[in-house]
Length: 373
Picture 1 (cartoon, rainbow, N blue to C red):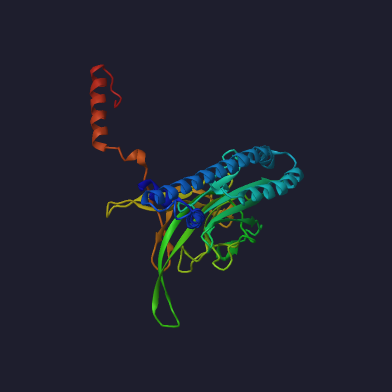
Picture 2: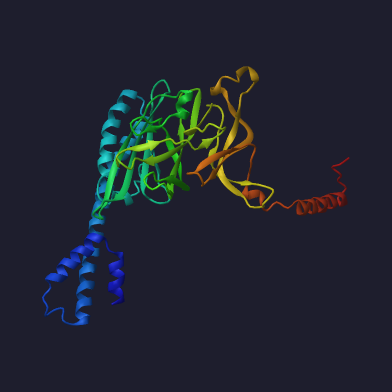
């Protein structure tokens, strides 16, 4: 009986409905005994699960075959010499990949052989983003992306939807203050996503009462090669339109560098300079607990005469941060000059180093060496 209960708990709703229907059709003579009833349920559920596993394996075999056909095309999109050829094959590549992502069981397939594509998934496993790019002869970058979204329909069945991302070439300074969507996308090769919980309230105007609401924010970290002179990195907020499952919304007024919030954090820097934008732990004196926040290199011009040319900015060796607060719907606060925790320095003990230094000095002195002369 215990095995039957475990089987019930692990089955999909559709499988349970199928077993219930078959059970009602089962003749009274066969289900007269208590043990007979449980044997019937266990046998039916085991068969349903086995058929589901076989179906998933068949899908994965098919997806593997189709993926191998896409691998050389993906490499040509990135590395081929002809821009015209790359744009031409990219159309069929994007269409084919979108069709595969709409297939049942494709959400659990990793597509690991497509190494020229970026693939990110949040911790709640509700969607995946595939992103890639084309570089033309002028070293200009064009970005493409697909969001594979998983959700449960009103009937309880699993459903997949693929949302294409359409790149716009608007890189004006005002891009930080705009709400974008999948049809008007800034374009990026995404390398990280973090999932954040929010706490907030809204006023019910019918009753006048305040209602607590918890939301989930997805923060995307992306890189944009832009031009031969400069690059962009960004932290952007992803949400989905509750009225339209096929619409992804990018941007939210949650980044407070000053009293007026920005809808995304965009950093332009020189192509000759490295730039770090990621999540890390920051040390603080009191309390002695490290804080986790978004950290990024502080950007500065090479000289004051170029202070208005953002494409010349580079990292100056210091770090700033964005600390997340859950209240008021969730927002980030700018923190200047943070100390990023380095795990390699956690074992550093000045007294032990000093002791070893003195022992080494005594050893050298015995041999007649004196480096302090």
